[in-house]
Length: 301
Length: 291
Image (cartoon, rainbow over all chains, first blue to last red; front, side, top):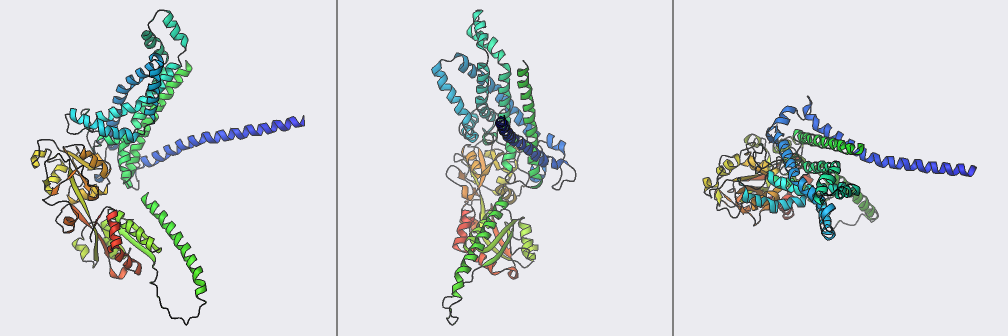
């Protein structure tokens, strides 16, 4: 009896220890997110609070300005927000259909030997460092666009869209593929058994059933596209002012604005770069909220 | 960031020098036991120690810090600091004796000359204007370059080239090269909004190398054969023409001091800066040596 109780207590202690170990590990992630959010918002909101030591700036001028000349005290980022959103939208419009069709092909249609070629290729694509995508864009895509473009340079919205499109493919493909694989075989058998063709089954039965998983992939793709920095910096052109007027116009996404100037900036200029980070952070938070809603929706079903 | 790294090096150096002093005093201890009658035959030069303070131009920082680090490596007893506060602040600090030496990336103004300061030009900084090798233009005037960067000239045919739109390439805001370029050509804050912005000398270079219509600027040390440096007012961008003052887009790096504020350390430092070793550091840090 006494021995058993001792054992119980020992086990209890072990359980407790394990509990705290896991809890501690879980808090590392939470503390990191909280610390980063606090740091970025704290630094980035300073310039909009009256009486700031480094000088103040109007939030409205910041969000609606079309010129970024830190030397002249002009910090407008509307043209960057527009650039970031257009680039992300373009990459999604082009990349998502390609990604979904690739996933369908891998999961449902491809013969085994083709699948063994495509899958590792997609996985490799996910592992390529983003600066390499940028070099590829600068070496291949930018010169090609220069030939087609009405403008004298190839650095453009289109170049950004094409690079981002390639970069979101692995995300969209892998998540869509696992969503398709999670659809029970009974759905397919039922559809085929009723006389539907294979294509009809895929597009009318399997894809609708995998909808929320696919949407999650799309949203993660959006997150990747809007947050991408290095690759984009090399092909965007990064002008100091002006809304893009065509797909051949150069753009300056929010991310590259921060990355290009942070190493030299000080004072108000630096705080305005943090403020740019706040805007970017806000976009990412919105995207994550959407993602949460989508995945929660699928759980309720 | 840079500053904290430097102060870390300073602390390290300090620790090292304390350690060395401790070691050497241990070795010297038995020497004091020897009879004093022995005449000092080999009088070693007195080891330098003490503070070495510089302040001034942000553009000179890279060269200045490089020189200080090298000098401290040779003289472990010396503790050097460089404060980047701008040329005007540097000149003022030298005049007031706040730091032993002030640095400037421009010639002294007349009012500053009245303060009785000594000047020592330790290096030159030159910026080359570059185009694609396929571009037939060879030579531009300072005025033409300024107008191109302000967006007043937008076609190469206006400056004797092909009938093609000019693609202006500049650097990111805050870059020292951009600051110097805009200051020397006197168009600060007026860069055309059509300009592409590339991060770093290397990206400017590859952008110009990849586009026959592009014009850019880089420091002399970044020139290579993928791009073509232009003559400015008929003068080639080479070190000799900077030193003799004919190449316009250049500026001197000057150390400024008052004789009475100098210490043994700072005097030795000035000698070191003008020595072969010092000038080698100047070159390594991307500036043009004066000797």
